[in-house]
Amino acid sequence: MDDEWATPTFAFHGLDYIPSGYSGILAPYIETGPGTMRAAATLMRLDLIPTAITPPDPLSVVCDLGCGDGDFLIGLLAHVNRITHTTQATAVRGVGVDYNAELIKTATLNALSAGERVRWLTYDFNEDRDDLAGQLARQHVTHVFVYLVPKQLALRTVRGILTQFCEGGGVVCCHKFQPDYLTATRRDTLMDLVVYEMAAGLPTRGADRGPGFEGLRKSEILASQSDRGIVK
Image (tube, rainbow, N blue to C red; front, side, top):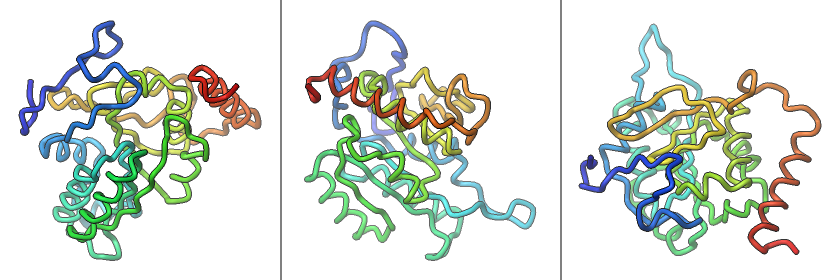
């Protein structure tokens, strides 16, 4: 099955075989087609047109975790803002995160050219040395789009980011590969998209994590870094 740009869509969730280029910790740079972008907007319920019966939601901020040159995020924002008839004051905004500084520079120029409001962050979330979940909270991020390879999703750091985000009431949308530590609430099987709104095994979204949560998360991050030779 292909998307509109004839990019094969894989669904090798939890299988031993992973397609070439998807088995490492860093995802291969593959552009996500416009069909997937529109389907993600719908599944995340970003494209709902406000009416008298359904007033507009609070301002949405969408993060693309591993945004590359920003093409997907910029296209998503343009699509949503166009069909929901937002004004400059109510427009959906974006936050793009990628470890590659050159791609972030390109993304910055692309967003300026497109007229979309995006904050770009050069950051290695595989290591997550500066609490990305906290940074997203300070940016009022409401939705996160994720297209990461299985080994990235399995990292304790990435798991901590996505779990903490969902616990705070955020919406995560994963493409192709899905984490088993989040609870799926909606799916688009055709486009291989899944939306998560809570962490698996937790009572409710936004529930009190207890005083030991942050300490546990920090110890998990250190363990992950030690596994990869970052911490001696």
